Length: 429
Image (cartoon, rainbow, N blue to C red; front, side, top):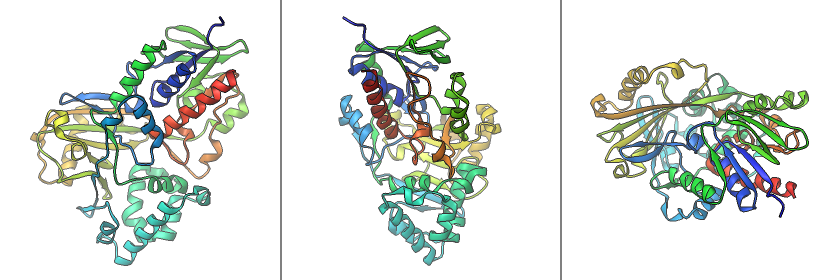
């Protein structure tokens, strides 16, 4: 009997894990290579209050069918819950509810006619199914034209500025469309954390004969017609096919034999890193609000997410869990500061958001940072998206740079993994 075709998967995030599962189910010999000592990528978890929690806040939307199907396939569908948490906005030092059309009409920082335009613009984006109609223009220009200058100045502009900094005025309109069009008021979460999904995937792979190599760094990828050769910190491994799920910029460094014209077109774009401070408090911070956008200037974080206004605090030993989140250039000094220095800046700022907050409430704290977490989706971004098939025989690329007009998300990674693995399996036949 012929030896099963071998496939190497680089990266053990949700995309790599799902693709590895599909390869294994198709009878391939699978090796999953991960630089870190854990699976999960940007959805990796840690323990707080005795429970598992993602390092960076995550939830699902009703439209996320692919990851919901995977959760069912892994036997966790009964643990997927859909609360409807409260969303708010901090503007002019005051917190406003912002989860319904009525809330939009009550948003007093805008004149009434501008509130109507804001709501009408959002309603249009929810109804518009073809984002291609919005190509070639920035979110800033579209918002100013159709929702109004005041809506941009007071509401959307501060959010774009807080998230993208110098790129705020360059972000493509299809990206903004996706943020409005695909969102749902009910948000999905696996009780006990998405950790359970990743743990179940890893267990299924291992039990099925796949090999998962953690703490293994890939140093180069080469293809010579006889196979694909992956040099790692544990030695050279040979495969019939390889799927790299690294960021495109990282892939370009790992594959030295890529042709110049390919590099010129696809070695493109900028990414911001993710930075999150997670607090375990002995008091509830906000009165029911789960997600609070910060529209005011002068805060070191762009959002406050009180996870336990979404999931029960009992899941975390009775602690009230709060994220203070950021996306920043990797050159930001914040990434080089100690946890103590970060907290010394963030906690006084949090008191400005919630004056009742006292630093004595903090039972435990954690600071995490990750590179390549937020692609900068500019107007010409879509012209530089690489195809999954690379110029190297047998080598494929799949990453969040390719989920345009979205920019990240578990659902889009699962959907891509299903598609690219099917293409690779068909090609290997």
